[in-house]
Structures are given as structure tokens and as C-alpha cells.
Length: 234
Ligand code: CA
Image 1 (tube, rainbow, N blue to C red):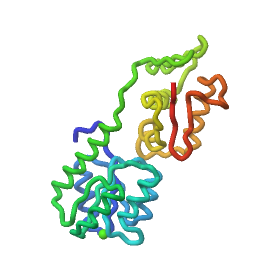
Image 2: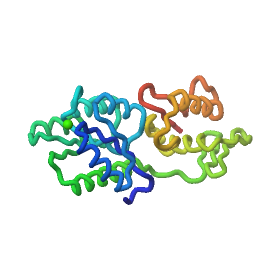
Image 3: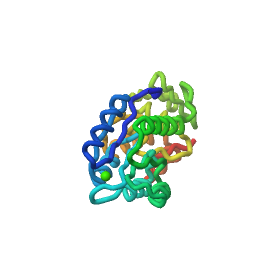
Image 4: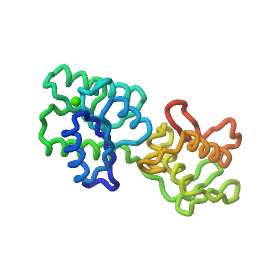
């Protein structure tokens, strides 16, 4: 697999034999696989964890895969979704794609084809997420951040930054003017499968405001965007 870190896949499939077979093959390809057998457990997993890809069966107990896809998109999550369906019906396919799925396979499918599509979708998504990187130092207003030394110079005074503070600053600055979602922050700064609360990220932002804002209650640089994420502006 050409990707640098293990990609995390959510597998939503209620047929146990197929589920186990897919899980085994994806794991052999080097992916981390999280299992969901119902729609509600799939939605719960998506809320708590960052995924590089979701493989979604359409026919599921309780909530069908197309409704789950729609719910995920409504919550502003752009995770790539590959729909699996037993129905060889054009309308089903169009509906799935219209509700926000990125690709579609009809059962029974060829395993090689599934694995190829999975790899392609994950790589495409990672390329989209790779933004232009900033250099070792970055200056705005009267502030300079040295990412390598993990320090900030504020009014000629040196502030030592923690590793996570430095990573979060870098991520926000690299995406200047754009909202960085909570999921993205968790993925980049905290890594896979670890879930700090929203409060944890908020506390980091509060610290940044103390360091880099003239009036921390009226921030000009570090913004919280309700329900969406966080944004840095120069
Ligand atoms: Ca099914």
C-alpha cells in the first residue's frame, strides 16, 4: 500500500460471512478495520472516530445504508463512501450516489476490484487533504512561531509550545482562511482511535488566543466555527 500510515476503514455489513471475509482481506492489505453490523452502530462509530473510507452495505436492519450515507453527509463529513448492494438496480445506484456516496459496487462483486477501488478512493482522498506545507517558521502580526523549535516569540518573549500545540498551530496555519473540522484535527494531532472531547480542542484554542490575540475575547486570528470546526486567519 503506498499510503504512509495505516488507513482506517469502517466496514458496515450485516451478513456475517461476507463481513468476516472482507475484514480478513482488508486487514491482509494492511488496513485497520472497524466493524459495524447495524446502521446505528455505524453512525456511532463515525461520530467518534476518523475514517479514511466507509464500505457501506445498502440492505441493513433498522436503517438502510443510503439513509446512513445521507445522515453522514448532512453532518458535513466528507469521508469517502463505497456502497455495496445486492440490488442490481439503476435507481438504487443513482439514489446512493445522489445521497452522497462516492462509488458503488453491486453484489456479488470481485474481491480484487473492491480492493482496487478501496485503495484508489483512499489515495485520492489523502491527496485532496494534503495541503501546501508551511516552512519551519511562520510570522503574523508581531508573532513568530518556530515549529521545529516548538516555540513562539510574542513581543520578544519566548513561549514554549507543547508538541500538540505546535501540531495544531501548524495544521490551522496550513489551512489559513479555511475551517478545519474536528475530525481532521483529531486525525492529524491526536492520531487514530483516540478521542479527546471537543473541550480539549477548545482549551488549545483558548491558549492560542492568550498567546496570539491582543484581546482574547475578540479574536482576530483563532476562530471557533460553531458545529464546523476551527479557523485561522492572518
Ligand atoms: Ca445486508
